[in-house]
Structure formats: C-alpha cells, structure tokens
View 1 (cartoon, rainbow, N blue to C red):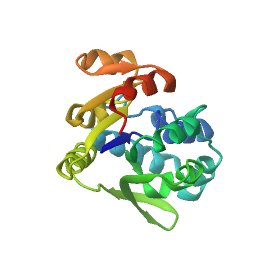
View 2: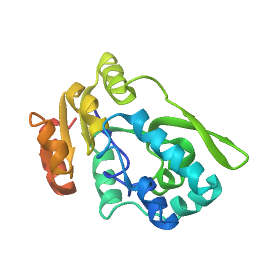
View 3: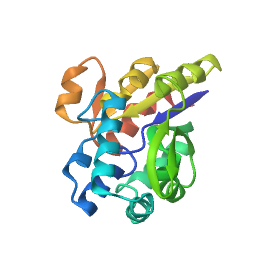
Length: 199
C-alpha cells in the first residue's frame, strides 16, 4: 500500500504568512521556509514582527480565510485520493490551516499548535522534532511505501526519508542545495512522476 505525503503551503495553498505580510505591509513576514532553513529562527523572526506591528490573531485569520487553494490543487487531490492514501505534513499550525484544509476536503493534516492569548500569538508548540521526516518513517514502519512532495528546505528530511521524494515548484536555491532530490514543475508533472508507484 502506498501513501502520498504532501507539504501544504506552496504545494496546495498559497503561503499564508506572505498573504498576511501583504495585507499588513510587513516585509519581515515575506520570508518563508524557502528562505530560512532553520524553522525556529523563522518563527522567532515572525513572532517579533507580529509583536512590533501589533497584529492580532483574528486579523491574521481573516486574511487566511480569504485565500483559496492554488489553481489545480483540488483536481490534483481528487486524482491522488483515487490512487493513494493521503497525508498533509506541514510546519503550519492547525489554527491557521483549518480554513484552507476545509477547502481541500479535509485531508489528514499533521502540523503544529499555536499558543494564543487575548487574541495575540505568544508562542507555538511543535508536534515533535523533525515532524515531517518522523511521520514518513512512522508510515514506513506501518508497512507503507511513501511518496512525498514539498517545496522548501523544511521538506528535505521528508523527501530524503520517503521511498520516492520530489521537490514541487521549488526555487532554484532549494533544489541546487539538494541536487539528489528530483524536482518537478506543476501537478501534471508530479502526477506523471507518481504514476509508477500507484497502489
């Protein structure tokens, strides 16, 4: 039995933090895991920016609720669900992601939790260390063959641990840093790459 593990932001939905950055005109929030390889460094940068600009959590949610899946994402997920077990492995947060996960038909999502007090984000809790890679290895321990796709530095462990891993629409600086990982562009190319591993 095969399972397909996908990143969320940049693969199926827009980058949520960048949408918030545009809405609030905060340049620091434009940076993503494509730019900052160490996740805690990125989150500390984000938390400082939110505090400095006095951004309430409810305002961020309003922006996220206005977003839609990337063009072609829902059709690709429909294709994938007919052929694979499906899991979304993300370094986002349930409090952010659920409005968009609803628009994707509620696939299994494994991600993190925010700490929100009085409508402000004051911290976050990771699901576990190396969560994407750990999830892949957990699925493999259950007897699954794992295919995976992601677009950022924080996906590298997942892609390397997977039986078949792909960078999806990843920027050149990410793919150049990890040339051993195959790279695809667009859902059609990803589907074609996955075809040999259909259940």
